[in-house]
Length: 248
Image (cartoon, rainbow, N blue to C red; front, top):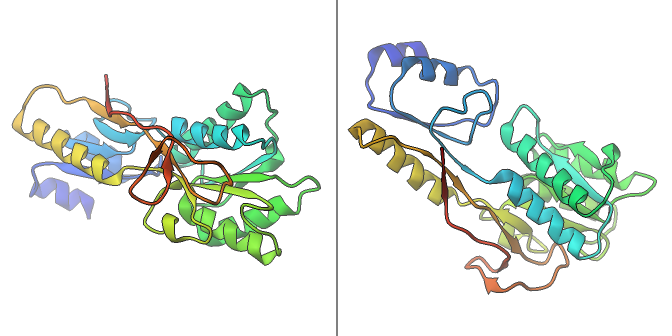
């Protein structure tokens, strides 16, 4: 199918979103050599122009916030490590622990497969540990919602019995019960940068450079943390914000 599309060349450029490291389509597009922008960086094709959020730093900030509020046993519900975002967010989790002198425990890192159902089971696994975590960082909001259901199923409460932080800050985060603290991923900005970079390539307007957009933590009620300096439009407190940075 994609071979036929590439042979026909009925397009001027491609914006591709793919979080799977082994996606078979990407090498075909790169071989074609046409204008392309990738949303989400790819570890095997670092020379491809891309737009991405600073996943590692966003995760580090989320876990550092939990540490600042006294948590030392912090669980991680991660996605498949075949996805670059899952690798980066896991690395940010580890970085925050190491920076605070907290040991990394393999039993506190479980796989939620980027799905609510798998995250539900992953959270139950964490709660069944001899020493369960006092806080959990789920690397997507969907997995955080699955974890929230598991906590309730055990008769526990967020954040009173266990703190919870997600990643994405999607539309449902502010309307969860309790409202979900989450790392904001600026999807609209990412799309706008991708279109701009693609148009620059199509028009031959100089050498386009990849863009990395800072992530920031939006603090709501699920982590039990205090208010921060400025307030977001989605009913939370914003801990950090920055301008997009081009990468070489």
